[in-house]
Every structure is written in C-alpha cells, then in structure tokens.
Length: 286
Image 1 (cartoon, rainbow, N blue to C red):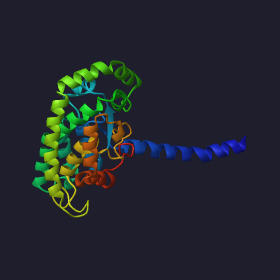
Image 2 (image 1 turned 90 degrees about the vertical axis):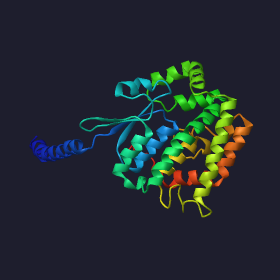
Image 3 (image 1 turned 45 degrees about the vertical axis):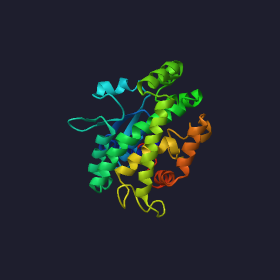
Image 4 (image 1 turned 60 degrees about the vertical axis):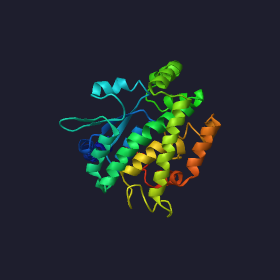
C-alpha cells in the first residue's frame, strides 16, 4: 500500500506536466482553413497545390458536382474551390485565382513576375474550361470510371451512396450545363492543341525542369497549367484522378491517342516532372 502511495506521488507530477504540455500544444496549434472542393476538379487541384506549396494548414471538404452547393452557398459562395480562412473577421475566397493570390502573400515565389500572373489567368480562362469539357466527355463514356471518380473520394457514406443512386441524373445535368458532346469536345481539343504548342515553345529545348512557363523558376503559372492538364496526362501523384482513370479506360480511340500523345510530348513530360518534383504530397493536409 505504501509503495502504491509513493508511486502515485511520483507519477502525478509527471501526468500533470504531460497533460499541461498536451493542452499547451493544442492551444498553440494554428486553426486550419477549410477548402471546399470537387476532388477531381482541375480548379480545386490548383487551389490544393497552391496551399500545400505555401504551407498553409487546411482541411478539405470533398463534395460531388452539384452537391457542393450545399457547402458553398451557406459559406457565401457558389462554385468550388472555396476557401474559408479562420481569421478575424473570417475571410472567404470563392475562386482559385483569389486562393492563389492569398497563397502568394505567404509564399511570394508563386508570383516572381507579372508574367506569372498573366499566364495563370490565361491558363485558367483559356485552357481550364476546354480541358474540363474534354475530360468529362471521355470520362462519361465509361460509367464505372466516372461514377467512381465522382463518388469514391467523397466525404460521408450517405453522400457517396446518394451519388451512386442518382448518377444517371447527375451526369445528364452536367452534360447539359457544360455543353458536353462530340462537337463541343472537338472544338475544345482544337483550342487545347494551340495552347500546348505555345507552351512547348515557352519551355524551350533544354531538359525538362530547367525552364518554366513564366521564366526560370516554378510559379503560379506552372501550377495552373499542370492542374488543368493533369486529368489528360494522368500523373501518378494525383490522388483524386489517377487511381480511378487510366489511358486504357478511355473508350474513344481518337481521344485516347490524343491523351497519350500529350503525355509523351514535352509539355506532358513537364507536367509529370512538376507533379513529381514540385507538388508537395499531403501530410494530413499540413
């Protein structure tokens, strides 16, 4: 009994100290921002990449297309990505460009020059929408693949089950809203090809990784370009696309050859290199 009392007296200060340290560590932790996404979205990927590069702690709310409104509307936005910053007063950023600018305040290397800003905007407006249309067009040709890429990464069993149940209707709404059909996909691919030719000129003849799209250093322009092209090139590091899609899963033989051709090209090699060397992998979202 006496030994037990002595042991208790010895342990109590240790427990108190460890408990105090634990509570202190909790109090000192920086609250995390909340990033609302559709996981496979090229614009959500751009925001996710920028936050990781800037080392801004965040948690990700993952939603399916259309379902995301249940989160963005109450927070003051409409589309994804949307970032809620736990500051005082609270800051809500409602598109990938604003999120990139927020990250650049913390990590100025994202905007080394004005060209990086201009190129980022160009890729967001000229490449992003056309890449998204082509990817949806090819993805929807395989119901199993498209259902998995929309449902499997999503938070919550109820939402995942609902997506699978309502998938035919969800696909129909997206096809109509984004004007996804064979003719529109062909027009979009023509636009993409022109942009890729210009990007290849920017990268020059040197080894991949020695020159970037806005100069000699990696910037927001490269994040934008690579994010929009990722669902076409399929870098293995993209945890929300590559586990569900492959070149073999593309039903349309013409688009499969196009995607494979881009992957083999200088710009495709550049995207793969940037994903391997410049995109931080998630560490429990920082």
